[in-house]
Image (cartoon, rainbow, N blue to C red; front, top):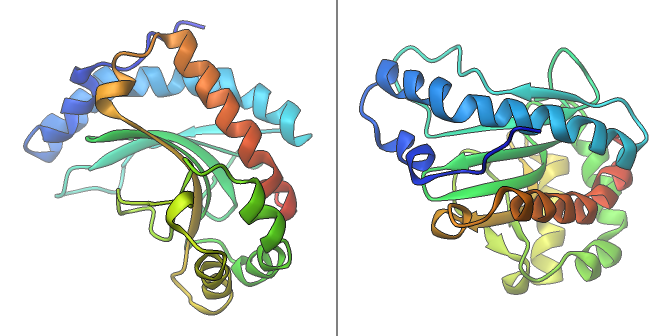
Length: 209
């Protein structure tokens, strides 16, 4: 494992003007680190889920004008892709690092997934730590802390997943960039390990991994 942690230079990539310049810096500075995390965590997640797991580093290949505002490595039990499946992510915005379990709008089974999550609302609400966060839009860096979310509000997210075409649900943990850049690689890896272990039950509830 040659992961060296994240630096301010990594987060500053998202302040670079222009698609070509930002993509060049992203490929040079961040992508090798995401690839290292992918190689490291795919077998760990395979053990935790009991399924074969493949890492997918975001390529942003379809972009022709707007530069990416975040980037990530995703983990799913399909070697061809992950967006259509519930999956795990590790990634960066300019402001923070994120670790997610995610069901995004491309998933064709959101209605069934939403029903399964709704059926386990009491377990989920009681077991997700207060410092974890929820989101209903993977394209927005903002998220809602578990500590500020009522059970009724969380239930509404699960219900919306069943009825709204573009609905999403993400649960995980965010680390402010000012903290992340000071974390030793081994400390950051332990934190990610901890977060994934907390999130594994969500994957099992959805019967997705």
